[in-house]
Image (cartoon, rainbow, N blue to C red; front, side, top):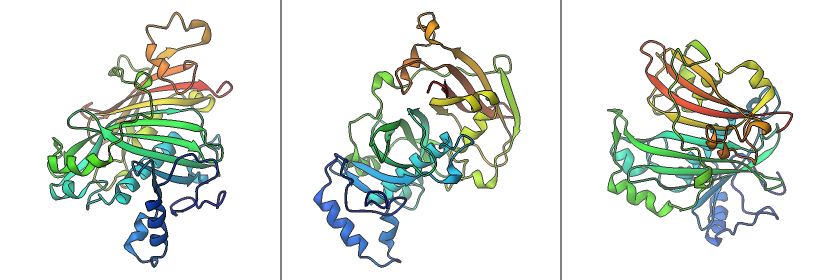
Length: 343
């Protein structure tokens, strides 16, 4: 119990005193009714969070576990991404839209369609420590004609300070042919009532810049022989998108991992990866920015203004994850880092 509020997978009725969002009275009634259900009720699967903002926003709380922190005793980027993914899936389930697919709606399941992420951008102001409780809000909106945008905000539950913002783009793929598909009108009508025209990250602060492709000649570091395991696969029979982060960081210099915090990461997914594939991780430095050199790098590194805090990044890297055999691209990425002494 944190301030009278149960966390990690247990739905609750009462708000913390400093939470400003109004809760729909219908939601409170729903919580009470669901809490009276027996433990084996199918509704137990939905008792994971609650809706706020007139049911457009789904909110869930988590406690940072000991196995979700890194050597510096704070949550890792993989932990944050996993929490975002968990909240998104619970949002679909609690909305009553879930079919028999992994995050797919009923109409999508009928057509053997699944959601796949094409791009994620995350900005981290501060990493939580072991035992901290975080509160995550998520919602969806249209992105063009045939994509969906999902946003998240992570708050420190105790202070209600926003510590992380993220946005992502999703498209539909046929589960069997693995080909991208337009959003069927029946699916569009399912998700349309949940669209909220609000942005977690201001448009002008979102990293939308092109991520350059690395090659053997342009990469500063290359790590080969990375092998996906069976446990890296997800329910859609491809490597979980969060797993790529660990492989990307395999080619980042160890002193950067030890002495810097990653404040921003953009992931651009290009193709699926299966368990049988061997991978290569490539990394190259693309910026080294200090306060004294900001003006000299203004044009070259203008997208550094997308960082989650007010000053520019100390380091910036471009990454590529590719198949080792045929060099086919799996994911391009960009990361920004700030010294732990100054963050």
